Image 1 (cartoon, rainbow, N blue to C red):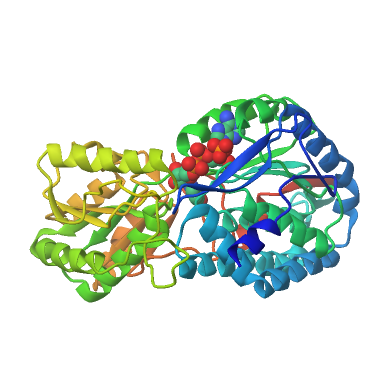
Image 2 (image 1 turned 60 degrees about the vertical axis):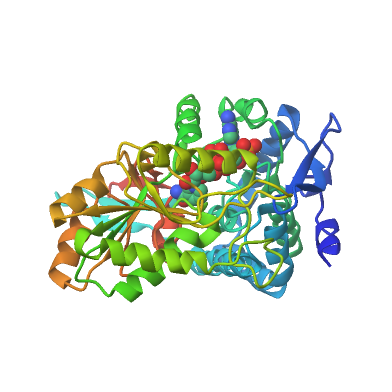
Length: 484
Ligand code: NAP
C-alpha cells in the first residue's frame, strides 16, 4: 500500500498546469527518516524552471483575479472535500516522508484541509468601505485587490498544512503563486497540486518547484519585479536572509519563523491538566514544531512533582516508525537534527543537568530516533535555554515568583507562543497581557486552529495565517477620493 501511495505522486515539477522534468534532468532523492532509505526521487529544478513557474503565475494572475470570488471559494471547497476523501493516503505520505506517527499525520491532514474550508468561506467576504469625507468635500471609497503573484516557501515539519495555510488564502484572494516545498518533504505538496488541478484550479495559478538548491534557484525571482509577495515559513536565520533579498523589490512579506516557547506552570494550576498538556505541547511532531514547548518554567513548590509525572508520561511513550499504528513517537527528520539534539543534551549535562528520563540513543540501526527526555537541574546558561531544540527533550527550570516567570518567558528575542497554566483568573489575565508573543495557550497545550490568526512577534515573524486575518496578507487596499 505504501508503495502504491508513493508511486501515485507525480514526481515532476508542476508549471502552467503541466507536469515536467527539469531542463537538466536531475533528480532529488526523498528519504524515509524511519529507515534512512530512499523512497523515491522528484525533479530537481534550477533557475530556468523557477523563472518558467513565475511566468506561468504572471500569465494566470489577471484572469484568476477576475474569476468571481464564489467560484474561487467553490474550488477550495472541492479541494477540502477531496483531501478528506483521500485523508488516509495523505497521512501515509506525510508519515513516510517526514516520520510523524500516522495518528499525528491524520491530524495534520484534517488541520490542513480546514484551511481550505475556512478560506472557501472567506473568499466571498472580501469587501471595501464607503465613507463621507468628514470635512464634507466628497466621498471616500476603499477597495481590495489581490496582491499579485506570490512566492510561497514551506518547511518540512508540516508538509501539507504549512502549504494549505498559504495556498488557501492566496486562492481566496485571487493570487497566482509559485510554491517551493522543503527538499526533504516534496511529496505531499506534489500530491496536493494534482488534487487542486483535479478540483478545477486553472492552469498557472499554482506552480510547484522542487529543488535541492533553493538559494540559486529562487534568487532570480526576488529580482523580478513581477513577483509581489513572499510568504515564508521556516527558520529565523533563513527568514532574515530572505527578508533582505525581498527588499530589492519591496515585496509584501509574511514570515512565520522560529520559536522558543515558554510553558509556565504556576502552583495554583490543575497539575494533572498541566502534565497532560505538557506532553501535547512538547511531543507533537517529536518536538519538531515551531510551537513546541521549549522551556518548562515551573513554580518551585510543584517543580519536582511536575518533573516526576512528566518523566513517567514521557517514559510510557512508544518510539518507532510512524507507520506502526501503536507508535507515539517517530524519528527526527534527519541525522543532522538528531546530532543537534544530542549535542544540546550533552551541553546541558556538562553544565550539571540531570536526566529524569531518556537522554541517550545508541544511534544503532536505521532511522533517526531519539528517546523522549526530561531534564532537571539545568543551568540557564546552557545553549539549550536559548536554542529552539526541535526534538523530544523537555528541560525544566524552577521559578519563584510571577515576575520571575514573566521575566524568563519574555527574556528571548523570539515571541511565537507561550503556554500558561494557572487556576487564578486574575493571574491568568495579568500574565497573558504581559507576554510578548503572538499566541497564548491558556490551560491548553495546543493553539493551532484554521479559524485563528497564527503568527508571532519579534524574531518569530510578521503577519498572520488563518482566521479572518489570514486573507488580509494577500490583499492590497486602494482608496479612491470622489469629488461628489
Ligand atoms: P529552513 O531551513 O529555514 O527552511 C525552510 C524553507 O526555506 C525550506 O523550503 C528550505 O528549502 C527553504 N530555503 C532554505 N534556504 C533558502 C534560500 N536561500 N532561499 C529560498 N529558500 C530557502 O527551516 P526548516 O528547517 O525547514 O523548518 C524548521 C524551522 O521552521 C524552525 O525554525 C521552525 O520553528 C520554523 N517553523 C515556523 C513555523 C511558524 O508558523 N512560525 C511553522 C513551522 C516551522 P530546503 O528544504 O531545500 O532547505
